[in-house]
Image 1 (tube, one colour):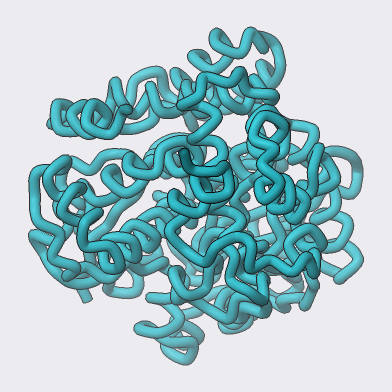
Image 2 (cartoon, chains in turn cyan, purple):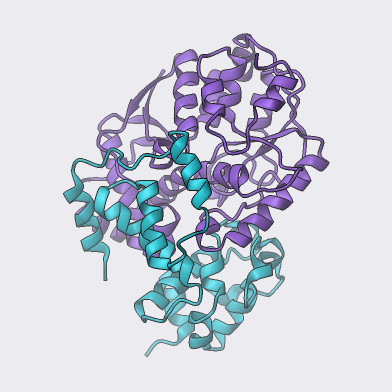
Length: 174
Length: 283
């Protein structure tokens, strides 16, 4: 059976993450490191040490904003942003409850909106997110203001060939 | 010139003024836009953050649709731009993935479309001098900082855009309009992007820092080319020091004397009209 490290490297399909020599450039440039449970370079070390549960249960993998600063600055071209994507995918596949539930619910609401209409209808997506995350009341004033200014509409044009979009979702779901 | 146009979902909703201003500016500069037929969402952050294959297949569907008319495809939204460039990169590099994605999407990826942001098209194809020659209203007194954010620039090998640590294209466009762009060190910093709903406090903190740094640089507004950045700058800053933000195309339309800017500014959450009136740029 593959180790956690081997599994992560296999999915990243790039420079093996053990090329990291912990210069911490990724962590220094990470805009959300201040809120993370484990810094990006620490996650690399934890993967090497086989700490699968700790990594996949961490808030770090959900807080990464995919700004790609880490991979852009890494002297060894370790694709840390892609690593975070891979870890999130592995957590979802292993049905590990996401530490940052609201962020996970946002992604779910976003993707289900594409699946049903082909395009995001932003107000409906946000209502869907609110129902999923049970965060009913934040930003209500702003939503109403955008509606009054004619920015957001309840109905917006959809992709006509919606079957082709649904087929993509079917074929790419595990 | 004639280019394909992929507006993306945001430009039909929270980024409506970006869509309207891109179209107005293109028309004034003689760029004909042809919307990609029956386009669908690119998947944005949520697809690549949770499902790699989906994150390539969704853009691939649109790339294949756009390839009916090979050439440039204008993608104003920085997030869509990044997803298309990234999908093209993966489809070029990984033959097995390409075969799989073509099977899923039901079409051949020909790689005949060049994905381009309007900043690049205006800067490289229209040119700074030609743009300056069309200015009707010099934007004297407007001191923007250019905020490029993440997704136009990173990773640089995939985005193939401007200098990834010190981009200048948007600053030069602003200069050509008579504005006085201010230099600052946060051009390529992150606003927190899609964390805005799931983790609002992170975005509030990052946007607060951007506003402080913009003021310290002597700016009186921010310009951007990303609907996610714009929404965060426009709605997640608070307090007296909040500066108004613009899509760079709104500023271009104002300088070119086009119809529409005032009606777009009304849609902003942080009203930019008092600033523009104080500079005599709006009646």
